[in-house]
Length: 230
Image (tube, rainbow, N blue to C red):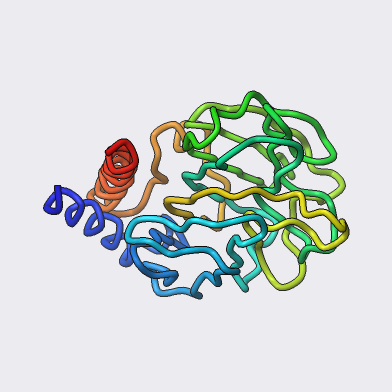
């Protein structure tokens, strides 16, 4: 098992020579550092383990770098329970209610609408959010399109200090957040296509690097599922 895990992380780290694939990659392998050498994630009180980051309500993560208006965010995450509104991504420096949530049993981009059913409590899902140059925002869950909308109001563009994950905005007295776990977060400076999301990897100039990333992410997801079952 340890040998397979080492190979998985080697595949992920090999992306360092292929900046066109991802601009940030956080594996939470005992560190909040970017495997590609960029800015570190900042934890807000959660627990960093050997393969993931666990957080309580509003104990998520922040990246002090704006991801702009064209991007992809790809992660594997779970919430311990689904009850009410629970924010996943905040775009406006925690000054606005807008953002990506779960709302009881549904994925929801406020204030656009719901985008399919969430998994069971504690069950991980691969969540991929893209915004392209035509302002089309698309949410994929486990590689399949859950919903999309044209973001003419720019509610899904990043402003302020950067990106906030699993932390609610500061406009409500009662935080709309939940405890949970995140296995990895990767960001791209372009919108991946539906085919790329389904494949689990963006194309890179070096074909070997793309194959290694796909293998690495696949092995990581498999290992972490086995670890949690054990």
